[in-house]
Image 1: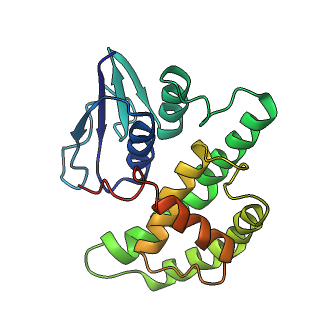
Image 2 (image 1 turned 180 degrees about the vertical axis):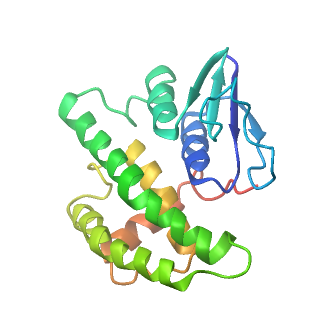
Length: 200
């Protein structure tokens, strides 16, 4: 199977897919889409959402990072990352949804304001994002006090997705010092060779 992955190095959703590809040693071609430049989004004919990441696997076109993660884990020997056992898989799906609907949006907003936005941050928007993060991150910290990874003893797709959002928080200068378990988990994940870089 020939796999092309369209994305941007600083896109957290793209990072999710690249980390899984590295963990599973999936041979693929990375095609950079420079989203910051006008007119450089993906053609609608390839991906109706016109957003990265996008997968082209022998003509099978798939968008949305979590859909791509599930597909690659299912088809490329990643069963440990997306377990088939229904209750374990449901927990992975629960945390993938949590990341997409709650953490991911706030982390992206904070990183955009504090790191990527030209002309300085909207501090009122940053303060509101930090207020909401202070409400939801203890949920994750509590989960990580009970097990080394989000869904138990081994890392799963949920860890990959959440890791990229926490990377954004760190990039934005958000302190994890009051969240001991989360900080320790992040350090452990950063130490995995597939997770420590790829911003190139």
